[in-house]
Length: 412
Image (cartoon, rainbow, N blue to C red; front, top):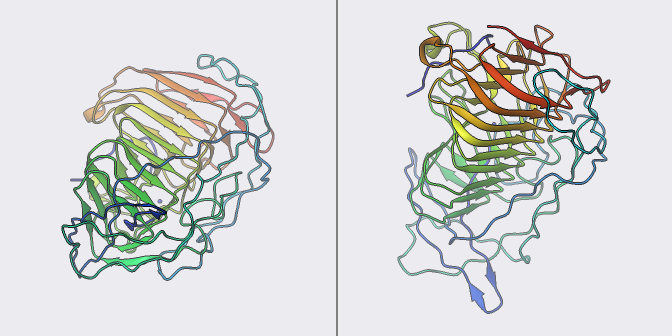
């Protein structure tokens, strides 16, 4: 059920799944069975448990400008929604040593360090295999290794370094897909429906999740250690009840997320890094808002601890609510780090409001906001807003074009 969102300002993504296991010299991985639920028939190749790494931003960036909108230009057999509106110009940050966080007063710390986001070393090349049309047998079968992906460029996340890598061949799975077996590896799928995960240590990479009207495209309902990388998540037919992702206990790296009402509803023990969230879908009437317009957020956090949002490109319009919205509508929020993002738009671009259910004013702390770069596109000339019950530690937050420190607004 979609919960109402209490926010300050009114109003706007796809990757998919193939489980293909690596077959190396003298070793093969087992193929396990996917649990699928499809409206119009689903087929999938299933990979055995596999380790996956997420590239963390490091080093210095050489990219200088925000990429154009649209899909990432990959040549695949899948068809899906394309990117989104063009981004305002963004400069890559220069290198810096992070200043110690200060309390609410903004400082003139240096811009955030740039970073490279290379992909992990690819598996050895080999032929691809088609997804079987019948259920996987109980005995493990060897499968060939999918073609490797080239390393991704660094810089501001956009169509050239997020989403499914160019040249990836995708295998279509029709309808919704549910994963209930721990350790499944889904690689190179085009899921023409939604993806629900009910198991731990599931890996979803180089895949397109197209979603559908009336549901969130990717849902992590249970499990821990979930990994998403180099995926595209969208909503094929957006509606007020369609978000891009709703996840917890997950690591998200280099995703292209667009076309949902919210990009990600983000829960505890989760990291989002080097991803591009943009092109949200707005509606004049949303039942979750009492019939008022949708309150679109690139990332919305309503409870949880140990959450990291780092080195992402979060682009919303001035008519959307925010790039990052934090409340305590579903529980306390703490140990939240928001760092080195590029962000623009919304009523206020970042909105930290500790209120709980029914608008109750609650204290909120344990939030660090450092080295983020902002545009000038917020409706109220408001890069960061906190309410008077909220305390944040902040430094190095600047306007992207000038490097000048932003002002933090504080009011209820």
